[in-house]
Length: 411
Figure: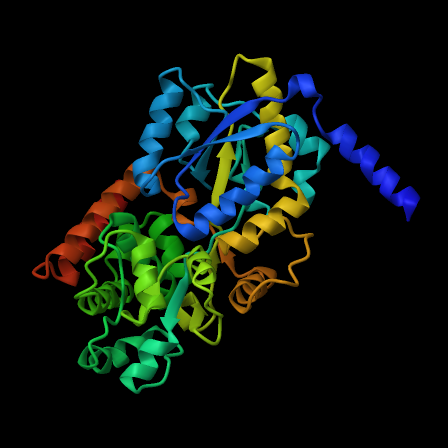
């Protein structure tokens, strides 16, 4: 045992930078809710343990608010040490412009290709065969979070799927409970729509929408069912009156709302509220519909090219730390997301995370919209769905036609 401890100590010494090379490194991100802050603190703690120092560059608001600020700094010659983007195409233009460093040497040395699961996560970090980011988690959007208290107060059973939630709405409203909490922001509202595309329309229709970019599929009778489901969702959100996603989650936690369709990052909010999965709240992957799929969305960190050699070295250390097994476990247990490594021990995961891991293990995963369509197309679709939620006179048929027109021109 003593020899093992000595060997481990020597390995740790080798991994840490020398005192002269330790440096501050600013890391920008948009993780500012209670659960998110607890998770990002795990990344900072692991990086600080190397002798370097994480300088937190949190930007309040959603990614829609933060990303333009991040891009402006990088293109304007004031780059940070590392910055968060979602998996997919959000940093594509920055990479193509030669403003981001590649991580080929680290990825090869640590054999990321063998441990990242599913492989599409690492592929999403690549351009022209080079690795440009560290995927840190798998965030599945396709969840329905239910307040057990809200349904008990309304005197009705907790639903097992989206269809049952819609049927329960009148009883919930009679009890003074908002059936569905959704923040009044485009990314949340369109995220709910995408969940319905996959849960109500199915995997094939989802891929026809966003991978094939088929306006005919969007215009089909099968797709009409999805737009009708979104109209049901709009009707169930009356009285929510919140903006931020974590405010909507808090409505579920407190029993003011019965449900929220939000990504698994919502788990972090339930955790800091000391709520227990299966007791205080219920989680339904795939909105509880048959044959649930999850998208391989999530967060990655990119590293702008820097002229300071010490900060460049610190970037390499941070990339390695983020992919380390211990960091992956500590971070994702707090974040509510799943690790990108397929070789870590998650025996301490809660019931909801275990459900997601089972779906991942079964291979029921699909690329996220961030990986399939451009940020510009996403913005256009967000705007359409936001207008739909804000104006009851817009019919599902009108939204379907406008959606098809955007998809016809999508890139």
